[in-house]
Length: 167
Image (cartoon, rainbow, N blue to C red; front, top):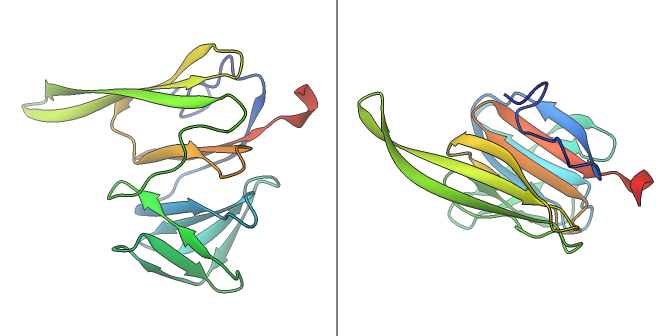
């Protein structure tokens, strides 16, 4: 834990925390292409839509295909690409100059081989900010319009939204 948050947001002045939520049994998430502020989150218990702009969460019904990495949410007229610890990916670049990079390393801890990952967020000014250093997270990346960033690990999900007042 980094201060009050699960990722280190110090130095990310153009970003605000929109949602930070524990999600038990996290499986998949994906951003809408038609409504990029909406993010589908699928857990073993339920499916929800995160409104990343407003910071609200709504339970929804959806069908998803783990092989095709696609989901259809009742009420939304689109297929949503999903990603999580079992496959898929999210954009690693925002389209506004920000990007995330990572370095993984195998470590032997607690009598077993584990994977640790260091994740860096590069601002549009070229500054590198280490946002996470720990056991391999489930998924992280940007929304398709580049205005939202999500990071999911076993602690929960953190969603950042672009702070438009700093532009």
